[in-house]
Image (cartoon, rainbow, N blue to C red):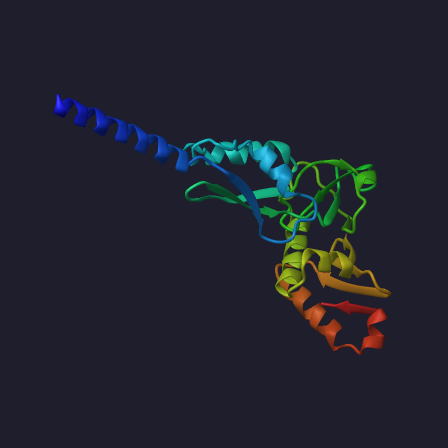
Length: 233
């Protein structure tokens, strides 16, 4: 009889341990970590989109399903989920990068009513009405997109924007500095927002370095001369 009581007690302890163990790993909080300060996305909407339920077991999370849920809400590809971190015992942290639409590319025709606001890597691909654009951005002229950004003009624009990024420009800094990018047959003109200022870059494989050279020439000018100039590179 004594052995039965001991066995019964051990059984209860095991059950209690299982219950306690399971409760320890029930999700109590979810938060979002942005690579940089977001412009459009917010933490609450991302958490809601993720469909992560509190008080579910942290080990039952399906990372791919969470990414899919978020992508279905941010269907312009503006939000990149970098990592879904489990902070044991009961917290979840979603690491994300917000792609910022700083380039406004005409869609299907140069002077039409449709455009694609996109990031410097051309990952955002949702078509919008031009009238919807109510924030600072860089206009693309002389080129338009149909079904792919993988053509010469946009690859060259990407190199130009990467040069400015390597010059430590933020996305906001780029839109403050550059008004429009005009694609010509042999050159791409980077038109600045202040005064009559233009970088005219030859369209070749070295356009990244030409952008760096043009900016260095700009910096070498006296401050008063930076309001009107035309730099060839």
